Length: 494
Image (cartoon, rainbow, N blue to C red):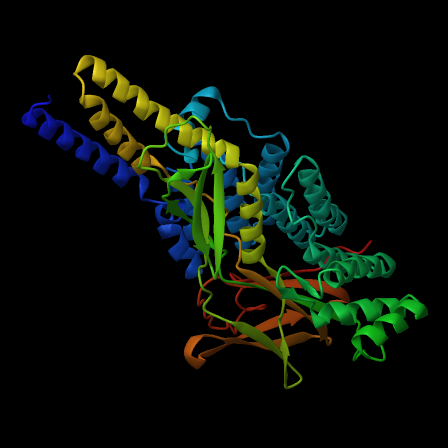
């Protein structure tokens, strides 16, 4: 029989262990980078960049890929395109070389949580590297290199999906990357290949009933598709798309100068975790969790002879939307508001990629779960032998509680990606072109911002960002205004 005093001391010791473990496991990557997030929301990109350098979590070797991704994006926001590409190129090489987990990290991850392993990136993050490298090259006046990067998005998606034997990604191609390709081709005067890229984008939307991960086909894409078909004299294709989408409002003459305005709004959803507790049944750990409006099941296979006990917990990552301040924006052109249309919405893509990966990694989760259970059972057996009969159940229960408390999902993700990317095309007149951007926020708030685009022949890109409510006061002394939040470039002529 176990003396009451001994049980008390054991319980107190176990409680302390649990409290320490729980305290260590409650924070997420997002909470550990909260200061960086605040600077991004306020448009303080230099401070955000310095924050990345000073963050201890991001300086760990196992988080190197994450650091390179975040740093590459913030340098892009700062307009430091060479530096941004240097970071993103290193990230690309890491991804391409297959990031390895050493034996120590593997064991640590199985007995604690997967954040002990190197961060390997979600698949949509791996291809987003090429999106920003393409923009960087374009702004550096290297459209040929920009095209290479834009093409790599769908190539990489194909390569990633090919290696999965089952539970392949539903995100296997990207419509927005085709739009980007078309824009870059046009900027170099290659209208034929621009038409092909726009047509490829249209086909992706068309085979998904007019939507790509919830994003409806932009009217701008329909117009660009018909416009380039007409320029190339593809009469049959032009008439086919007119019949499908209606007569486009095309200018009689092609403008001498145009700009594509990209607007990045908000920050991508951050990863939190959800802890599922359930009893094993039929050789599987079965639980459900709410993912937005949908109740998602999770089924983890467990060996038939495993003793699950009564204290079971599995933590899995889950995206938490970081609401954008602005819901939409328009550009005032000749007195009329022209919408910045949604081109890419990262949240549904991120959520689907995570879900597909979790299905592929169910066995890995099961190994972590089983390792903790086996540890508890082993300690219980030792306690029975060394402390006497009856201690085994106490120690095993305590070990199970401690295992449940250290259970933690991998909450790392590329958090400086935007929530959405919108775009539109505007014609330019000679001299400076002033446009007013109207941004619609919460409770009827409308913020306005003036941007000035100097005329240049051909097509140029303009980027501006509102990660939070970064209301800009136009600078009347310099052109263009708001350089911290807007970059524009035109490629060098061929």
